[in-house]
Length: 378
Image (tube, rainbow, N blue to C red):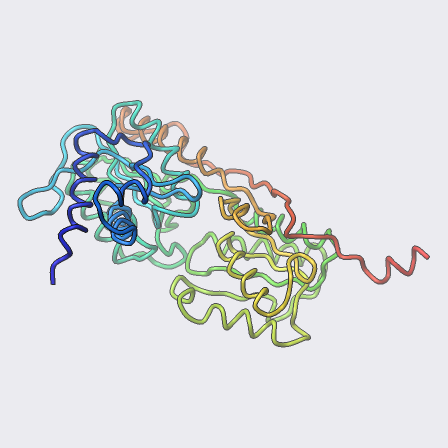
């Protein structure tokens, strides 16, 4: 069954606006209400149409700000598939596009690349290796000059390695951000995630917390290193580390199983922590919602530390203490690196950048007053 005519009309018209330059890269498009009035359709139809354009990488959403044009539209051939593009083109592949920290990273790249006369071809993998393969094949067929990519499931072997070797053989420079495939030893820009996990945990320990658990994603190296920093804080402070001190999960677990793992810990009075270090801000908000359902409050009952200092950190009534991610700066640095490499025959002066993490302290954590301290003060 085909898609409704009105739905397709919205999609086709917005694509036309982008292709004709009526909506330029980085510009905000009309709101859902305005689009609904213009096309005489429901907001639901608009939301679906815009969602598809976001998935295609032509638009991106920024929480609290609206929906923006990502890049110049790609041309399509008769079969409806993207056709090869000529000119100065940089491919960008991220795990996600439209939410969390990714719009800020992409914006940082976009402003610089477009100022240098380059077009962006943007796609996302949903942190799926098979989708990464499709993205890489598409990039290789589209005459790109350089590629910026965030790896998918970086903690395991990646079966797409030969595509990166093909890029190297074709002298197309590529740069990995947030993590990298160790099998390749490629140029990369990353945050020192081990130190980030350490300072997040150290903050809770210094605030008097002794019963702390960590929740970490383990199919990406970011989570593995954050967990490593978490464990190091226990070691350096000589705090007992138990088998159930860590809750681990994968991308797939988020859809099912993750919530039950957290509730199992909260159901056992002996295991309930006073502090939780989370893989990122998105997980921190999920945990806060679970705690609320269980009748627990943050930070009065349990202190929470997030990671990435995303827009979510200040989106709810509880403002998250969070490790800062250099989103826009990384995007800009990545754009400068790839242009330098493209214009210098694949070579760049600095192939590795590791950013220092910084803890932004807000209201989701508090100092625990130990009984011993109370007794000694009397």
